[in-house]
Structures are given as C-alpha cells and as structure tokens.
Image 1 (tube, rainbow, N blue to C red):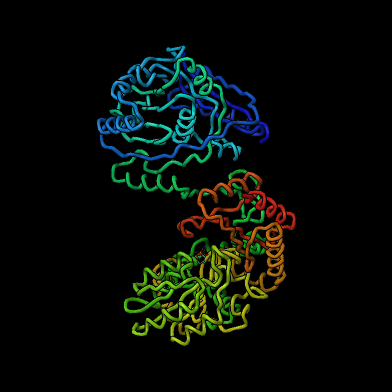
Image 2 (image 1 turned 30 degrees about the vertical axis):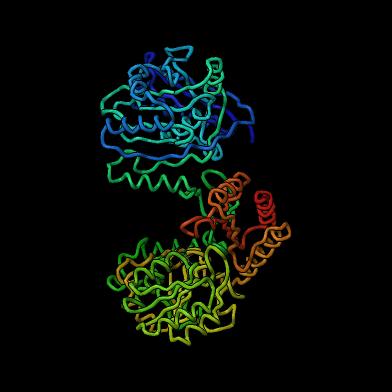
Amino acid sequence: MSETYSVKMRASSDGHHVSGAEKIVPAASVSKVASRLVERALSHERGTPDFINVKIESLPSDILRLKALPVKTHVVATPAEGRALAAQLLAEAGIANADEIMARFSETHSLRGAMLLDADTLERLEPDQSRGVRATYMDDAAALAKGTAGVKNHYAEAIVLATKVQNAPNIIAEICVSDDPDYVTGYVATRELGYRRITVLKEKGDPNGGRIFLYRGSRDEVAKTIEFLEKTPILVDDVPTLPSAANAPRRFGALADALDARQAAGLSRRCRTLGGPTGPTAIVDGRELVVFASNDYLDLARDPRVVKAAADAANEFGAGSGGARLTTGTQPPHVRLENALAKFKGSEAALLYGTGYMANVGAISALVGKGDAVLSDELNHASIIDGCRLSGADVLVYRHGDMEDLDRKLGACREHRRRLAVSDGVFSMDGDILDLPRFLEVTRRHDAFSMVDEAHATGIVGRTGRGLAEYFGCELPDVLMGTLSKALGSEGGFVCGSKLLVEYLRNMSRPFIFSTAPGAPAMAAALTALEVLIAEPGRVAKLRENVALFVSELVCHGVAVRGETAIVPIVVGDEKRALAASAALEELGFLVPAIRYPTVARGAARLRVALMSAHTQEQLCAAAASLVEILKP
Ligand code: PMP
C-alpha cells in the first residue's frame, strides 16, 4: 500500500464539541479530505465553531485489517422493548447485570470517549474518567481504496468503531446509545453476535447516551486494551452499506432483515459510480480501472458517429418519444431501425421495445398463456424467466443445453394448446452458445414455437456478428430476440421474425402497447452503430482475437476457461470468495464483477469477464496474469 495518513478534524464552540471526524486516506487525497472535513465543520447544524483542529499524521504501512462485524437490525416499538432485547443479547454474551450497566448511561453523557467498565464488578477502568476511552485511528477499507472520504456515514462509522472495539484484547461487549436526543437507535456488539442494531433504545428527546465498553480480564492488561483502542490504526473490510430501513416504521423491519441476511451471505449489491462512458477503461468511483464488466463489446457506445447520431436525433425529434407508438405515433428512426435490424438478421420484420427485458417478457407472454406450455433452459436470463412466469403458461425447465431433455419434455406437452421453447443464444453468465440447429430440429418436430435470445450474440457470434444462424449456417428461430444495449452501444430491445409474428406482437404484446416508445436518440444511435458494425466487420474479428488471446493466457497458466464468446466466466463457487477476488482485482486496477445468486445458482459464484474489441494486448495479458495470481490456491 502506498503512503497512508490519518486525517482528524475536531471542531468546538465555546469549549463545546460541535463536530468531529477521522479518515484514513492515501497521500494524494490528504488535502482534499482535510478541506472537506473543514467545510463540514463550518456548516454543521449544531452551530458555527470558533475552533477547528485538523491533525494529519503519517501511518505505518502495515495497517491491521479487520473484517466488519456482521450486522443485524432488530426493529422494536418501544424503549422498554429495545432495552429488554439489549439485556437478552448481553446475557447471551455472558453478562448478567445488563440493567445496572444501562443505568450508567446517565454518566456517559458528559464523556467525549467511552466508559470502560469491568463487566462483572462494574468498576470504571479508564485512567481519565472525565474523558473516557476514545477509539480512534480506524476507517472503512473500501473508502481508503477509493481514495475518497465520501459523505459522513454514521452507520458505516459505527460499524467500523464497533469492529475495532470487539477486536480489542479483553473487551467482551459494547453497548451504545446515541447521545443525540432525536436519534433513538443504538446497538449491542459482541464478537460472536456481531453488530446488533436496535431501532429504539431510548425515548425521543432524551439526551442521555454514550458508549460502554465491557472488559473482562486482568487489571494489568487494561493499559494494553486502551493502547489498542486509542493508538493502533486499523482498516475494516466489508463494511455493509446502510439498510434503507434503519429507522423506519415497524413494517419495514422485515425488509431490513432481508438486506442484512443478504449482506451476511456476501450477496448484497451496490452501484458503482462511473465518471464517463464505459470504454475498455473507465473512471469507477473516482479511479481509472481497466473494465471487464461492460457489454458494449464493440466499443460503440462512445463512438463519435454513434454519439452524433443520438445528438442529431434529439435535436430533430426531441429527447423523449411522447407516448406509445400505437397511440401517439411512430417516429421515423424507429421504423428505419426496425427495417435495418430485420435485414441484418435476415428476417421479414422486426419490432422494437423499450429494453431487451421488455422484449423477452412481451414476446413470451403474448405467445403463450393459460393452457399452453413454455419450455425454458435452466440457465436462461431472468427476463426470460419473468416472461415465462407472467405468461401464465405451464413452465417446464429443461436441463442446460440438453436437447434430449427438451425433446422429452416437449413430448410430454402434446395436450397443451401451444408450445414455446425458449433459450438464450449465448448464455449471459456462462458464455456458451446454444446448439441452434438441434434446437430447431427438436422444436419443429414437436410443432413448437422456437425463441432465441441473441442479446449477447448480436455483433459477436458469426463471422460478421449476425448471430447464431450465421455461425451455424442454419435457419432462424421463429422468434429472434435481441437488445440494442450491448454490442449496439445504445438501449432498447427488439424481436425479429415473420411479418405475421411481428403484426401479432404489435397488437398483443403488452410492453409494446402500454409503454412509451424508446426515444429517437437511442434508436438513431443503435441504427448508426449497426451501420458501423456492418461496415467494419474487423471489430467482430478483433473481439474474437482478444478472446482467444485472453483465454490462452489463462489456460497456459492452468486456469481452465472457455472462450466461445465475449463472456468468459471463471467459476469460483463461494460468494464471498468471488467478492474477495473481485476486490483484489480492483486493487490491481481491473473491474471484474463477482456474479452471485440470484443471477447464478447459490455456490456457483463467479468472476464474469466481459471482453471488448478495444481492449489492448497489454490490458488482456495484465488482467490474465493478475487473475492467475489471485486464483492461486
Ligand atoms: N437477455 C439477456 C441474455 C441479457 O443478458 C439481457 C441483459 N442483461 C437481457 C436479455 C435484457 O436486455 P436489456 O438490458 O436491454 O433489458
């Protein structure tokens, strides 16, 4: 790790505390963070300070890393209920006298630090009882990695502090009640129970609060405990993000619990902030990374011609379309794009939707309903699964890529009114390609509709990127779905098929009928991207070369991967291991997302590497080398 500093700010007015904060930041961020903390002090709602102290210290390079305590929220209705729960949790931690401990909050109010109590005798152990013990030199490791000190996040700060305290020698528990009269939430933390937030621990308006650290051990070691709390720098990994229901009404409690459970299982998700378009590199949360997470496979989303087409269309047709095409009317870019897509795919006609998700849901639910059967590959994309569910048809899931299983299951649906078999063309989390000729043979034999999702095939599969029919040299499925949001660098979805099919969908497909048409800028951008793709087939070839290079770099170092398409999954299994590998890659400058349940099955977590034609050889080789290093057992 490069040089690291502690930046602390403390502001007071007339000797009374106004605000305080501390951050651990890389050298490059010190001045930015310090000035942000000063700005915060100057605009604090508790009043304008007359004294601000900023302390900046260099830290040793080997900062201790701790794993955040797991968090669980308990939603309670009254302070009595909250205190009873706190007592029960302390009892579970082997502390019997919870009521007496909580009565000591009347004394903690005046302390800047925490009270250090002997858990059994309730004797105070701090050498300076007017000040208490202050846990300092700690931060969220993720904030440091980002090089930003973000906005003040009380929730994350409390977890960082509680994690440090529970790792201090001889500390067996902490109980904390906010000293803010308006904030009634507090927590009990122990190493075994983790961080148990309790939504109500005191009456609104009550200024009493503070922290009590409970100590059990020899008196000779108190100094060691205090030394750890006050002097040892630590960084905490995996600090959870704020559950949205922190202080919410009771009915939101189950939501907070569900979020906490996801967090504990390594399954919670958050959005990264991008500082511009996603090319092969992008600014992610303020830092430039090489991106292996974009479906903009041919680097067309930021192509000047594509961007200009969108801008020109916005000028000519406006930003939004104004309504559904059947009620408001259709703008020419939509019709031009439908014609171009049909020609590109070799179908009679095409129909646009707002997104690929809507295209799948809209087509499936229009084609089958109650009394029909839909047969779906077990690894199909969520939008197909949702379309199947919404249709009301009987859903039969067949084994991944297993045409014999499909055959058998279709055979068992002879009594159904209609049958539809649907499959990803390129499986979005596995990158493998459907055996389209066999799929067509089986479905036709059973007189079932065939539907293939070419979201990850369009622009990638086939010599010129036309998709599976070009790749296999076979016919098209009855329903060919695709998206504009991946290799076509825009957004929107489409279905290609016969004129009859498209006319049927135009009349029957609810997401087409009842949703506002996508805007002309996105349609014009996709049309131009399609024209570039047709004019420059070298992009498709370059993407294939990149895949071959990347895969061979991995395979020759013993990492077995498959490289049929632009999606190269590296299955690690355990969710937390996948997250850790993704975080380690990010440290090294690569954005490779960890894909976890429910996107893939539990225990089948993976790194999903998405390659682009614009990645350089150096980027591919460096990423492969880092992956090999990180995946070493
Ligand atoms: N199908 C597949 C296989 C996908 O991967 C996606 C996008 N993740 C979609 C459909 C949905 O497309 P869109 O993002 O345009 O809604």
